[in-house]
Length: 146
Image (cartoon, rainbow, N blue to C red; front, side):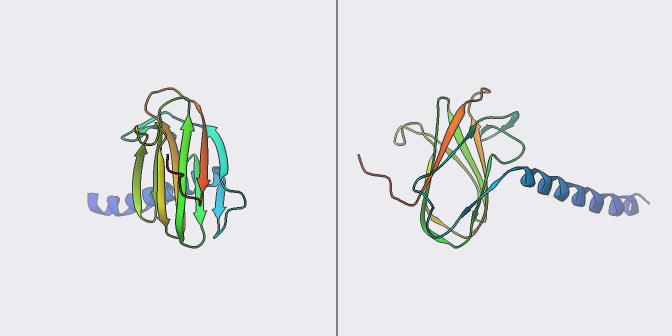
């Protein structure tokens, strides 16, 4: 008897979960990345951090940015700058990645390389519970060597 009840409840819960995820994505504007950026770097601003504690800092429930890569790109670089200690959590076709700033990057989370086509959910977090304004730079140009 209990198994029949579970078989009814679980599909409903899955559908509701998918609906809520889709609703939160609808609130986040998507940035479409084609073979060539309209400006390089493409600069986006927002507020880092959030109320959800994760192993990639404090993030928001919904993604901070959504990037739609229409065609695979041989090179794309994302860099986050903030007054705080920003983190960058990316969920995309290749998996889930947490990027932290280090001494090499000057404390700025940065990721670069090949990007396959697909949707990427970006969460700009903070290591501390604080929130700060951030700048996200998206570029197709390699980082100049120091």
